[in-house]
Amino acid sequence: MDLLSECKASEMFEGQVVVYKHLYAYIDSMCLKWCLELNIPDIIHNHGQPISLHDLVSTLQVPPPKIGGVHRLMRHLAHNGFFRVVKIHDENNDNEEEKEAYALTVASKLLVKGTEHCLAPMTKCALDPTLSGAYHFLGKWTFEENLTLADVSLGTNLWEFFSKNPSYLSFFNESMISDSQMLKLALQDHRPVFEGLESIVDVGGANGTISKIINAMFPELKCIVFDLPHVVENLSGSNNLSFVGGDMFHYIPHADAVLLKGILHDWDDEHCVKILRNCKDAILNTNVKKGKIIVIDTVINEKSDEYELTQMKLRMDIVMTNVNGKERSEEELKKLFLEVGFQDYKISPLNVIYSLIEIYP
Image (cartoon, rainbow, N blue to C red):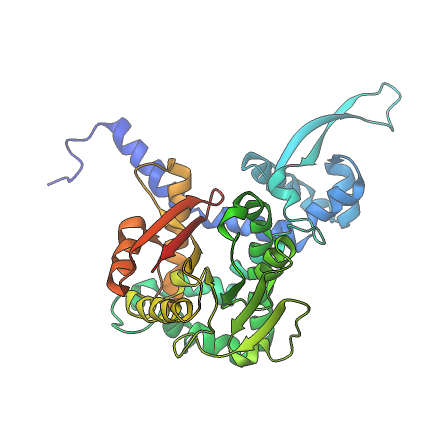
């Protein structure tokens, strides 16, 4: 029996589009990788104005047979929002004929190197063949009861892989720093969250990017960056910012508040409960009655988020198979909070991607 015998031809064609759309979705990522490898956002930025295809390929020194290929790639990236096609006057033409040129959009401006909110490190890390290649092993991962996707693809868990490969650890840390820099804009609108606190410990804070942002907002607030010893051993603090080595599964330094930025989504429920219990112990051992845990993470909300945003969050959820973590819904987070014995929590939108969650003991 033909499974599709009752379907109209138009319906089958629509289904074909869905299949092909996902079949070739990786092309979007590969075009973006090409764009960064050739430093095209930087070239347009340094050009000082929208750049024509002729000037772009001349700067890149592209051989003539590949100029058409560059045009096709730029057309694809422009269609997907990375560049804007505009008209400019041809200065080399006496008739001042207009020609097409590529201008930066907000998305490609975020890829220009050396800027405060550059996401190029995050993009390059995510598209590295060794790391992104892990997702070819999702089928095998499905039947490995206790292994992460990294265990299956790399032969070890992701954190051990980073510790044994310093270049990749640096690569990963740079990507996390670029992501954290984006939060600087959002945190400015959430100052009340930190008001009244005398101390805060940034768990898994790496080089202290988030703590430095908070410290700049509240110079009198004592910020403790807490991470594994090998992560913080060569880092030095200043004024009210310090670095402490340790393991969050054993203990967390005492403070009025504990910050977990992008931590809970790295772990399964069992490990999250351990982390949250240690966080609770850390804030209950201070004299402040308003102690709390501050979580910055993605919260999946399929009912209220727009389709494109939900799609991105669900993709990020699949990314977390690398470490057996997950992006959670409010219901899943609430379950964790109740298991640890927290009395209340509050979720506020931080930016489009992340939410800010305050948990009270």
